[in-house]
Image (cartoon, rainbow, N blue to C red):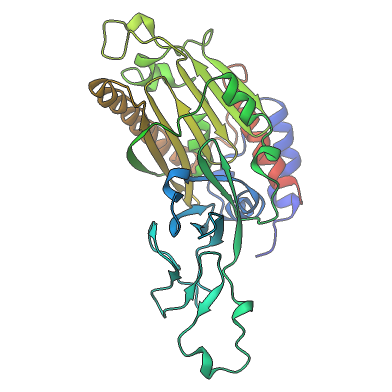
Length: 368
Protein backbone atom coordinates (compact mmCIF):
# COMPACT_ATOMS: atom_id res chain seq x y z
CA UNK A 1 0.00 0.00 0.00
CA UNK A 2 1.07 3.59 -0.49
CA UNK A 3 2.63 5.40 2.44
CA UNK A 4 0.23 7.95 3.89
CA UNK A 5 1.38 11.49 3.07
CA UNK A 6 2.30 13.96 5.79
CA UNK A 7 -1.01 15.82 5.62
CA UNK A 8 -2.94 12.55 6.12
CA UNK A 9 -1.06 11.93 9.37
CA UNK A 10 -1.53 15.52 10.51
CA UNK A 11 2.08 15.58 11.69
CA UNK A 12 2.31 19.33 12.29
CA UNK A 13 -0.76 19.29 14.51
CA UNK A 14 0.43 16.21 16.37
CA UNK A 15 3.88 17.71 16.98
CA UNK A 16 2.33 20.84 18.45
CA UNK A 17 0.05 18.76 20.67
CA UNK A 18 2.96 16.72 22.01
CA UNK A 19 4.95 19.89 22.72
CA UNK A 20 2.04 21.22 24.79
CA UNK A 21 1.52 18.16 26.97
CA UNK A 22 -1.17 16.39 24.98
CA UNK A 23 -1.21 12.76 23.82
CA UNK A 24 -1.03 11.20 20.40
CA UNK A 25 -4.34 11.64 18.55
CA UNK A 26 -7.04 9.12 19.45
CA UNK A 27 -7.43 8.04 15.84
CA UNK A 28 -3.85 6.75 15.79
CA UNK A 29 -5.06 3.89 18.01
CA UNK A 30 -7.71 2.57 15.58
CA UNK A 31 -6.67 3.77 12.11
CA UNK A 32 -5.57 0.89 9.82
CA UNK A 33 -3.34 3.23 7.81
CA UNK A 34 -1.45 4.24 10.94
CA UNK A 35 -1.10 0.57 11.92
CA UNK A 36 0.36 -0.22 8.50
CA UNK A 37 2.87 2.60 8.88
CA UNK A 38 3.87 1.27 12.27
CA UNK A 39 4.58 -2.14 10.79
CA UNK A 40 6.71 -0.60 8.05
CA UNK A 41 8.57 2.06 10.02
CA UNK A 42 8.74 0.62 13.54
CA UNK A 43 8.42 -3.15 13.74
CA UNK A 44 10.25 -3.94 10.51
CA UNK A 45 13.44 -2.39 11.92
CA UNK A 46 13.29 -2.99 15.67
CA UNK A 47 14.82 -5.48 18.08
CA UNK A 48 12.28 -7.72 19.80
CA UNK A 49 12.75 -10.13 22.69
CA UNK A 50 12.25 -13.75 21.60
CA UNK A 51 13.30 -16.23 24.30
CA UNK A 52 15.92 -17.21 26.87
CA UNK A 53 19.15 -18.44 25.32
CA UNK A 54 18.79 -21.65 27.36
CA UNK A 55 16.06 -22.79 24.97
CA UNK A 56 18.62 -22.79 22.14
CA UNK A 57 21.36 -24.72 23.92
CA UNK A 58 21.74 -27.82 21.72
CA UNK A 59 22.28 -28.44 18.03
CA UNK A 60 18.90 -28.52 16.30
CA UNK A 61 17.10 -26.48 18.94
CA UNK A 62 14.75 -23.99 17.36
CA UNK A 63 12.31 -21.43 18.75
CA UNK A 64 9.51 -19.67 16.91
CA UNK A 65 8.01 -16.27 17.61
CA UNK A 66 6.81 -13.02 16.10
CA UNK A 67 8.58 -9.72 15.49
CA UNK A 68 5.85 -7.20 14.76
CA UNK A 69 3.86 -9.19 12.23
CA UNK A 70 6.81 -11.20 10.93
CA UNK A 71 6.84 -14.89 11.96
CA UNK A 72 10.40 -15.84 12.89
CA UNK A 73 12.36 -18.95 13.79
CA UNK A 74 15.82 -19.08 15.38
CA UNK A 75 18.00 -22.21 15.16
CA UNK A 76 21.31 -23.44 16.54
CA UNK A 77 23.40 -25.31 13.98
CA UNK A 78 26.05 -28.01 14.41
CA UNK A 79 28.79 -25.38 14.67
CA UNK A 80 27.01 -23.75 17.59
CA UNK A 81 25.92 -20.70 15.61
CA UNK A 82 22.52 -19.06 15.98
CA UNK A 83 20.55 -18.28 12.81
CA UNK A 84 17.34 -16.34 12.45
CA UNK A 85 14.86 -16.61 9.59
CA UNK A 86 11.44 -15.56 8.52
CA UNK A 87 9.39 -18.63 9.43
CA UNK A 88 7.93 -18.93 5.93
CA UNK A 89 8.64 -21.61 3.36
CA UNK A 90 9.88 -20.26 0.02
CA UNK A 91 7.28 -22.41 -1.74
CA UNK A 92 3.83 -21.17 -0.70
CA UNK A 93 4.34 -19.37 2.60
CA UNK A 94 3.56 -22.14 5.08
CA UNK A 95 5.71 -22.04 8.26
CA UNK A 96 8.77 -24.26 8.26
CA UNK A 97 8.42 -24.75 12.03
CA UNK A 98 5.08 -25.03 13.80
CA UNK A 99 6.43 -25.13 17.36
CA UNK A 100 9.63 -24.98 19.38
CA UNK A 101 11.65 -28.16 19.22
CA UNK A 102 14.88 -29.88 18.25
CA UNK A 103 15.44 -31.30 14.75
CA UNK A 104 18.32 -31.90 12.37
CA UNK A 105 16.40 -30.13 9.61
CA UNK A 106 13.45 -27.77 9.26
CA UNK A 107 10.69 -29.20 7.10
CA UNK A 108 7.51 -27.53 5.89
CA UNK A 109 4.68 -29.93 6.69
CA UNK A 110 2.63 -28.70 3.70
CA UNK A 111 4.68 -30.08 0.79
CA UNK A 112 7.82 -31.34 2.51
CA UNK A 113 10.34 -28.69 1.47
CA UNK A 114 13.33 -29.21 3.75
CA UNK A 115 15.90 -26.69 4.97
CA UNK A 116 19.20 -27.04 6.84
CA UNK A 117 19.66 -25.30 10.19
CA UNK A 118 21.53 -22.47 8.46
CA UNK A 119 18.54 -21.87 6.16
CA UNK A 120 19.61 -23.48 2.90
CA UNK A 121 17.02 -25.39 0.88
CA UNK A 122 18.15 -29.02 0.94
CA UNK A 123 15.31 -30.69 -0.89
CA UNK A 124 11.96 -30.00 -2.51
CA UNK A 125 10.01 -33.10 -3.58
CA UNK A 126 9.90 -33.45 -7.40
CA UNK A 127 12.34 -30.58 -7.91
CA UNK A 128 14.38 -32.73 -10.33
CA UNK A 129 11.44 -32.64 -12.74
CA UNK A 130 11.61 -28.87 -13.06
CA UNK A 131 13.83 -26.81 -15.34
CA UNK A 132 15.81 -23.87 -13.93
CA UNK A 133 15.11 -24.87 -10.34
CA UNK A 134 18.08 -23.52 -8.36
CA UNK A 135 18.06 -24.43 -4.68
CA UNK A 136 20.66 -21.76 -3.91
CA UNK A 137 18.11 -19.07 -4.80
CA UNK A 138 15.54 -20.39 -2.33
CA UNK A 139 17.13 -20.24 1.10
CA UNK A 140 15.03 -19.04 4.00
CA UNK A 141 14.90 -15.26 4.32
CA UNK A 142 17.26 -14.22 7.15
CA UNK A 143 16.54 -11.94 10.10
CA UNK A 144 19.06 -10.46 12.53
CA UNK A 145 19.76 -12.25 15.83
CA UNK A 146 21.53 -10.97 18.92
CA UNK A 147 21.94 -12.05 22.55
CA UNK A 148 21.81 -9.91 25.70
CA UNK A 149 22.24 -11.18 29.26
CA UNK A 150 21.07 -14.67 28.40
CA UNK A 151 18.14 -13.66 26.20
CA UNK A 152 17.75 -13.85 22.42
CA UNK A 153 16.43 -10.89 20.46
CA UNK A 154 15.50 -10.70 16.78
CA UNK A 155 15.07 -7.98 14.19
CA UNK A 156 13.35 -8.42 10.80
CA UNK A 157 15.95 -6.03 9.35
CA UNK A 158 18.93 -8.31 8.73
CA UNK A 159 21.20 -5.25 8.33
CA UNK A 160 20.18 -3.74 11.68
CA UNK A 161 22.98 -2.54 13.98
CA UNK A 162 23.66 -4.77 17.03
CA UNK A 163 21.34 -4.40 20.00
CA UNK A 164 23.96 -2.67 22.15
CA UNK A 165 24.55 -0.05 19.45
CA UNK A 166 20.84 0.69 19.18
CA UNK A 167 20.38 0.81 22.98
CA UNK A 168 23.78 1.79 24.42
CA UNK A 169 22.34 2.49 27.89
CA UNK A 170 20.86 -1.01 28.25
CA UNK A 171 23.90 -2.80 29.68
CA UNK A 172 25.02 0.07 31.97
CA UNK A 173 21.51 0.29 33.41
CA UNK A 174 21.37 -3.45 34.04
CA UNK A 175 24.72 -3.33 35.85
CA UNK A 176 23.83 -0.27 37.89
CA UNK A 177 20.43 -1.62 38.92
CA UNK A 178 21.43 -5.27 39.39
CA UNK A 179 19.07 -6.58 36.73
CA UNK A 180 19.78 -10.05 35.42
CA UNK A 181 18.06 -13.40 35.89
CA UNK A 182 19.04 -15.69 33.01
CA UNK A 183 20.19 -18.32 35.52
CA UNK A 184 16.98 -18.24 37.56
CA UNK A 185 14.44 -21.06 37.44
CA UNK A 186 11.79 -20.78 34.73
CA UNK A 187 8.30 -21.16 36.22
CA UNK A 188 5.50 -20.41 33.78
CA UNK A 189 4.55 -18.77 30.50
CA UNK A 190 1.54 -16.45 30.71
CA UNK A 191 -0.45 -15.09 27.75
CA UNK A 192 -2.93 -12.25 28.08
CA UNK A 193 -5.12 -11.29 25.09
CA UNK A 194 -5.46 -7.50 25.13
CA UNK A 195 -8.46 -5.87 23.49
CA UNK A 196 -6.49 -2.71 22.81
CA UNK A 197 -3.99 -1.23 20.40
CA UNK A 198 -0.40 -2.16 21.32
CA UNK A 199 0.43 1.45 22.19
CA UNK A 200 -2.27 1.52 24.88
CA UNK A 201 -0.69 -1.41 26.68
CA UNK A 202 2.82 0.04 26.39
CA UNK A 203 1.58 3.31 27.89
CA UNK A 204 -0.05 1.43 30.73
CA UNK A 205 3.12 -0.54 31.42
CA UNK A 206 5.62 2.32 31.45
CA UNK A 207 3.89 4.50 34.08
CA UNK A 208 2.65 3.87 37.60
CA UNK A 209 0.40 6.91 37.98
CA UNK A 210 -2.49 4.44 37.80
CA UNK A 211 -1.04 2.00 40.34
CA UNK A 212 -2.60 3.44 43.55
CA UNK A 213 -6.10 3.26 42.04
CA UNK A 214 -5.96 0.18 39.78
CA UNK A 215 -3.50 -2.05 41.68
CA UNK A 216 -4.50 -1.33 45.29
CA UNK A 217 -4.52 -5.02 46.30
CA UNK A 218 -1.73 -6.13 43.95
CA UNK A 219 1.31 -4.14 42.77
CA UNK A 220 0.68 -1.16 45.07
CA UNK A 221 0.43 -3.49 48.03
CA UNK A 222 3.82 -5.00 47.22
CA UNK A 223 5.84 -1.93 46.24
CA UNK A 224 5.96 1.78 46.98
CA UNK A 225 4.05 3.70 44.30
CA UNK A 226 4.25 7.13 45.88
CA UNK A 227 5.37 9.73 43.31
CA UNK A 228 8.09 11.02 45.64
CA UNK A 229 9.75 7.59 45.75
CA UNK A 230 8.87 5.85 42.50
CA UNK A 231 11.76 6.54 40.11
CA UNK A 232 11.32 6.99 36.36
CA UNK A 233 14.25 6.98 33.92
CA UNK A 234 14.00 7.71 30.20
CA UNK A 235 16.97 7.35 27.89
CA UNK A 236 16.78 6.76 24.14
CA UNK A 237 14.52 3.79 23.47
CA UNK A 238 14.52 2.66 27.11
CA UNK A 239 11.90 3.56 29.73
CA UNK A 240 12.69 2.38 33.24
CA UNK A 241 11.04 2.19 36.65
CA UNK A 242 12.59 1.52 40.05
CA UNK A 243 11.00 1.40 43.48
CA UNK A 244 11.52 -0.27 46.89
CA UNK A 245 9.28 -2.78 48.63
CA UNK A 246 6.31 -1.43 50.54
CA UNK A 247 7.55 -1.60 54.14
CA UNK A 248 4.24 -0.18 55.37
CA UNK A 249 2.65 -3.48 54.34
CA UNK A 250 4.93 -5.54 56.57
CA UNK A 251 1.95 -7.37 58.08
CA UNK A 252 0.64 -8.52 54.71
CA UNK A 253 1.86 -11.47 52.65
CA UNK A 254 3.70 -9.01 50.37
CA UNK A 255 5.61 -7.15 53.06
CA UNK A 256 8.85 -7.50 54.95
CA UNK A 257 11.12 -7.70 51.90
CA UNK A 258 14.45 -5.89 51.59
CA UNK A 259 16.93 -5.61 48.76
CA UNK A 260 16.96 -3.91 45.38
CA UNK A 261 13.17 -3.79 45.08
CA UNK A 262 11.37 -3.62 41.76
CA UNK A 263 13.32 -2.75 38.63
CA UNK A 264 11.88 -2.56 35.14
CA UNK A 265 13.43 -1.80 31.75
CA UNK A 266 11.16 -1.36 28.74
CA UNK A 267 12.91 -1.57 25.37
CA UNK A 268 11.33 0.12 22.37
CA UNK A 269 9.00 -0.89 20.93
CA UNK A 270 7.50 -4.00 22.62
CA UNK A 271 9.89 -5.76 25.02
CA UNK A 272 10.78 -5.48 28.68
CA UNK A 273 12.56 -7.10 31.59
CA UNK A 274 11.23 -6.81 35.16
CA UNK A 275 12.71 -8.16 38.37
CA UNK A 276 12.59 -8.02 42.12
CA UNK A 277 14.75 -10.05 44.49
CA UNK A 278 12.67 -13.24 44.29
CA UNK A 279 10.62 -13.22 41.07
CA UNK A 280 11.32 -11.88 37.58
CA UNK A 281 9.63 -11.88 34.20
CA UNK A 282 10.20 -10.89 30.61
CA UNK A 283 7.46 -9.17 28.66
CA UNK A 284 6.70 -9.32 24.95
CA UNK A 285 3.85 -7.39 23.34
CA UNK A 286 2.67 -8.80 20.00
CA UNK A 287 0.30 -6.67 17.88
CA UNK A 288 -2.47 -8.93 16.56
CA UNK A 289 -4.70 -6.30 14.94
CA UNK A 290 -5.33 -2.59 14.82
CA UNK A 291 -7.17 -2.75 18.15
CA UNK A 292 -5.72 -5.87 19.71
CA UNK A 293 -2.47 -7.33 20.96
CA UNK A 294 -1.15 -10.14 23.13
CA UNK A 295 1.07 -9.80 26.14
CA UNK A 296 3.42 -12.73 26.78
CA UNK A 297 5.28 -13.08 30.08
CA UNK A 298 7.88 -15.68 31.00
CA UNK A 299 8.10 -15.91 34.78
CA UNK A 300 11.26 -16.86 36.70
CA UNK A 301 12.08 -17.42 40.37
CA UNK A 302 15.33 -17.08 42.27
CA UNK A 303 16.72 -20.60 42.77
CA UNK A 304 16.83 -20.13 46.56
CA UNK A 305 13.47 -18.37 46.91
CA UNK A 306 10.89 -19.69 49.33
CA UNK A 307 8.29 -21.63 47.33
CA UNK A 308 5.25 -20.35 49.17
CA UNK A 309 6.46 -16.79 48.72
CA UNK A 310 7.06 -17.31 45.01
CA UNK A 311 3.55 -18.69 44.55
CA UNK A 312 2.03 -15.70 46.35
CA UNK A 313 4.24 -13.24 44.50
CA UNK A 314 3.34 -14.75 41.11
CA UNK A 315 -0.30 -14.44 42.08
CA UNK A 316 0.28 -10.74 42.76
CA UNK A 317 1.84 -10.15 39.34
CA UNK A 318 -0.87 -12.17 37.59
CA UNK A 319 -3.54 -10.09 39.31
CA UNK A 320 -1.72 -6.91 38.26
CA UNK A 321 -1.66 -7.99 34.60
CA UNK A 322 -5.34 -8.98 34.67
CA UNK A 323 -6.23 -5.57 36.09
CA UNK A 324 -4.21 -3.89 33.34
CA UNK A 325 -6.00 -5.93 30.67
CA UNK A 326 -9.35 -4.76 31.96
CA UNK A 327 -8.28 -1.11 32.05
CA UNK A 328 -6.89 -1.00 28.50
CA UNK A 329 -9.96 -2.81 27.13
CA UNK A 330 -12.36 -0.08 28.20
CA UNK A 331 -9.84 2.63 27.37
CA UNK A 332 -9.69 1.40 23.76
CA UNK A 333 -13.43 1.99 23.40
CA UNK A 334 -12.97 5.59 24.42
CA UNK A 335 -10.13 6.07 21.96
CA UNK A 336 -12.16 4.45 19.19
CA UNK A 337 -14.97 6.98 19.67
CA UNK A 338 -12.54 9.85 18.92
CA UNK A 339 -14.85 12.11 20.91
CA UNK A 340 -11.76 13.22 22.85
CA UNK A 341 -9.31 13.84 19.98
CA UNK A 342 -6.34 14.33 22.32
CA UNK A 343 -5.85 13.43 25.97
CA UNK A 344 -4.11 15.76 28.44
CA UNK A 345 -1.00 14.27 30.02
CA UNK A 346 0.52 15.16 33.37
CA UNK A 347 4.13 15.26 32.18
CA UNK A 348 5.68 15.19 35.65
CA UNK A 349 3.83 11.97 36.52
CA UNK A 350 3.62 10.51 33.01
CA UNK A 351 6.96 11.50 31.52
CA UNK A 352 7.53 7.97 30.13
CA UNK A 353 4.34 8.24 28.09
CA UNK A 354 5.43 11.60 26.74
CA UNK A 355 8.79 10.05 25.81
CA UNK A 356 7.07 7.04 24.22
CA UNK A 357 4.78 9.27 22.18
CA UNK A 358 7.83 11.07 20.82
CA UNK A 359 9.35 7.74 19.80
CA UNK A 360 6.16 6.83 17.92
CA UNK A 361 5.89 10.26 16.32
CA UNK A 362 9.54 10.35 15.23
CA UNK A 363 9.28 6.88 13.69
CA UNK A 364 6.13 7.66 11.70
CA UNK A 365 7.36 11.09 10.63
CA UNK A 366 10.83 9.91 9.60
CA UNK A 367 10.03 9.23 5.94
CA UNK A 368 7.05 11.56 5.52
